[in-house]
Image (cartoon, rainbow over all chains, first blue to last red; front, side):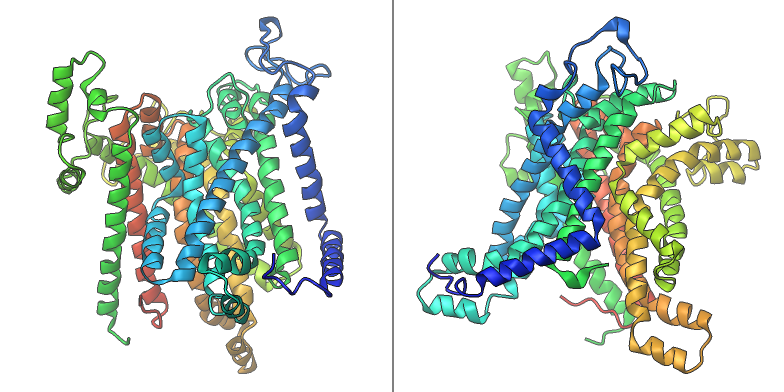
Length: 295
Length: 341
């Protein structure tokens, strides 16, 4: 980019500093390291899942139904004799895909809306803020239910609903971050050198808002996974027999009162671990991005 | 700027009006965004083109959108939320009958959650780095990662199936008991008012597990915020002055520090209430609790749109009212607070 002259001499030292700082944070905070390891595990399961699982996640076998965990079925089998371990591993792709696309959508839309509101102020700001306030006036999970009910019961609409209820967080954050830099020296310099409003906003101001947005994304991913799993737990979006953590817990719930715990425990634990991973990652990222907020 | 307390309250009440209007607009959009033709949907599967046109005229769907919205607001003003196709009752009467069950569960869970989270947060802040601080950290981290329906099922497995301490997760009261005469709508209180200790005990037994489930879920943000706010206040100059002036530890902690840390905690409580209203739906499903959450889930399954939208609207209004009460309580706690902008 021609408008960023400051990336010449001090760049290697600065990145070395960040690298050392990351190493320091990782060493001081083993939880972040653990989170990175778990994230790798989930990504491997999501990408390779169907290729590496020992059984077909959809193959039923009535003779082998409701067997507790054993060597051949690590997480036991469900009421139709399907292998719970294979289903849990294969489900990670769908769960992560729903959460990632929902968060990507709300990040994109929220950044644009919030940046415009923070940059132009005035009526743009007032209208955007009013819309955000209205969305925030709903209990978020309830609004997501209403949106899925209105738009139709499909996986795509689960993604859309999760994206809409998360939108205010990104929009508010980018609005604040853009607003405080609106009149900064480097922005005025860029204006004087002939950049248009949009170009100043996109190449000069917005990149500065990215670090706090990254932290928000990571913390938000965990919540998006919980939200999507909650929606499928109450029977929205994903349909059986598709393996998905929320719906697997819902199917396993019927067997809890008769003592077949493994049907609900393992998908629930996978869900919990995924949320935990993203929360830990978010806390770790925050330590790297903003050392003052360390707790 | 320095208006009287009455003016502040009036101003805040006025600020709730645009929010309420926004909520009504959003629910209106949701009712009009139904997949396909709403008139064809409400006319039923055996509809002819004529009967669909009739329904369209009857529902006012042939009018421009602004006129439809006006009619929607008029219906709301008279309490008309439409007809539920699954129960055959009006949505309003369904919700009114089921709301006490949800409120009993949510309020007892929140009370439990505050009773644990606030002392835990204070102790963690005053005894930094000790066992209680680490406990607080574990609770906070685990609490935000646990899917609420999963916690509920785990509690059912341990306390019902394994230990046999809790009753079966089949709603507010076992079939063996008769519901107490309704006064408050809260079974435990109603049974006590009727002098029926046995029913009260049974209703309480049913309430414990779902309330604990919801409390675990809402505990984390409250404890986290109490700890952070207390740490910040305890580090400030006026606390040092109060200590230097020789005030007792208890006096410094409660009448100086805690009172000032209360505002952010109460703000967090508003957010937690929103979470609780959402999580309530999941907890009610796990424990077959007959509140408005499970009503909405049942309605969703059979595509009973009027019921779902009524539920969304009632929840949103409830949340607006709670936020209003929280903001108003600021002025009681901290006279410096005004509402500008």
